[in-house]
Length: 452
Image (cartoon, rainbow, N blue to C red; front, side):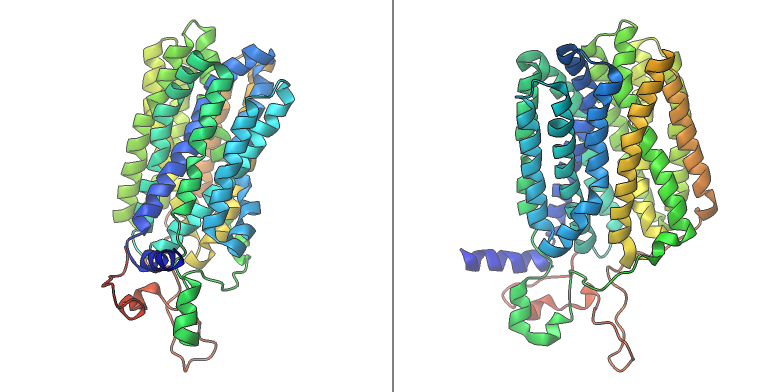
């Protein structure tokens, strides 16, 4: 068994196993974003069961999404020490525990922990693991691989609200949460699919020379990039973008029900946003692959459009109008979400990406924690369904405006590691590009080409 696992690990290290990693990324985004999109449906049943207001209820979703992002700053050291595989498996277990325990909760405040904090931590551990795995498996087509991985979010947006509504109607809130827990446990299988990009056995067999070739870059990376103007602007826009991102999906259900639209109909309207979201993610990914130097510009355009389209919601009174809004908003939300991730490739050097994205997730979590509860509180305070969307529009447009001075920044992203230097040069790097690895020498029984 150990020999089989060792052989499979070696094969995964050099073959196109990166495609499987993209599949695991797809499943993660399907579950994480799908869960967030279904929170608005959960809110209706939670408010009815525990007799609480919208402001208190939205804190559950805010904790879930916020910790799911900001927990990256906690997860990153574990990934660096133990690797992506065990950390993602642990994240799947946390999701199972959180949602399953929620079915036995009889006191509303406990839901903040069982439905908010614990699953949020599970998602953050899994998300950081898979993002780093994708970054290390792909030398080329990084932007395209990330884009297709996050398409799972669109499928989740399309299916999860309908699924949760159907489960809640058939089995009640507790039954829906229990099945949700079982679905989230699939993250364990996704984590098991992440094989290390270089096995310890390879080092032992090939001596010190092959130790210089490392897919897990242990080079000390400083954080000086954090004080560079492009990254600072990116972080401010990151905060504003995440604060506004889920305002529609979390607050439209109550707004629609208050004007006579049924829960069934509005859950369908929210679900169809996944169609637009899917096309937005795919189109942005394809455009970024062919026009890498314009990625930040595309992101600015999508942010602006996302904000302006939100102005449509206060004037919507029919189900058809909500559906049109959700499809259009879903398109630009999906494109903006992909742009948020891959714009960082152009704003900082590639060797800083893993640290940079983990910090970005942390700030994004703060934005998610603030955005929906704050706008829900304003709604309850002023009894206005429109003010949330005006605030959201302002956040999107301001974030886009901040990024304009850095729209033309471009960093080449073909190579995972800095180009190797000659051995006779002083302070030469001990790391070489994966493209220089002759896998046929390591594994003579398999003829392998460099992966994507």
